[in-house]
Amino acid sequence: MSRYDILIFDLDGTLVDTRPGVLASFEYTLNKLGLPPYHDPYKFLGPPLQYSFSTLCGLDEKSTEEAVHIFRQKYRTEGIFNAELFNGIEDMLRTLKENGYTLAVATCKMEKYAKIVLEHFGIAKYFDFIGGADENRYEKSQVIYHVMEKPGKTDTSRVLMIGDRDNDVKGAETLGIPCLYALWGYGSAEEAAEVGALTAVNTPDECLRFVMEK
Image 1: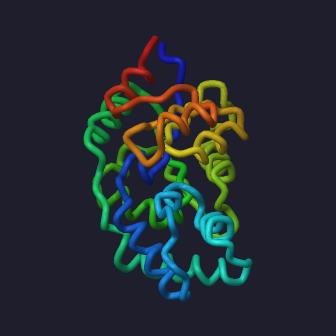
Image 2 (image 1 turned 90 degrees about the horizontal axis):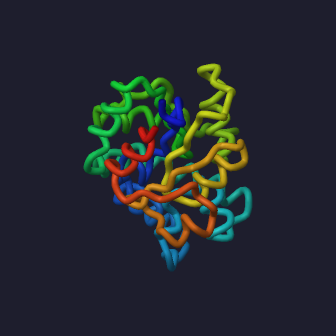
């Protein structure tokens, strides 16, 4: 028997490469607000929008709300499908589902957009629950808790988070859940070690083998 029953996946950078649409929407938002381009736009990949605009860009609360609104308008109309499924993801999900695992998604993307993206790429069918952000739930730990709570899965002892950035690891850790770090995404081996990921895997196939180890 595997060590895990429930697998919770991040979306951006783990299941789908949403980088082109996300970065284009950030660039548009900063330009719309009259702000200069950010020196390291890749830092926008992963964290909640509120964190990115307030902490990375130094915006006050009102300006952050405006930035989030502008970003979401642009993203839902033009950026949302400017993405592609990572190689090997569907094969991994299909195998896990066939072997009886409960699969879920926990993303800081708005929940309604997450469902649209996963449906578009034909992989929503593999998940028992898709959880994302709303106006009051945007920290990663909040979204993971939301995912655990909705299907009534509150026992974390056989749960594994799978994500590609530090906020995935930290959010899972807050709830006592280990996190497998996906190196095919937007992070790095250095970040995985620094934040205390359970371990790091290079490909979805490596992820599958790790999860199914007896």
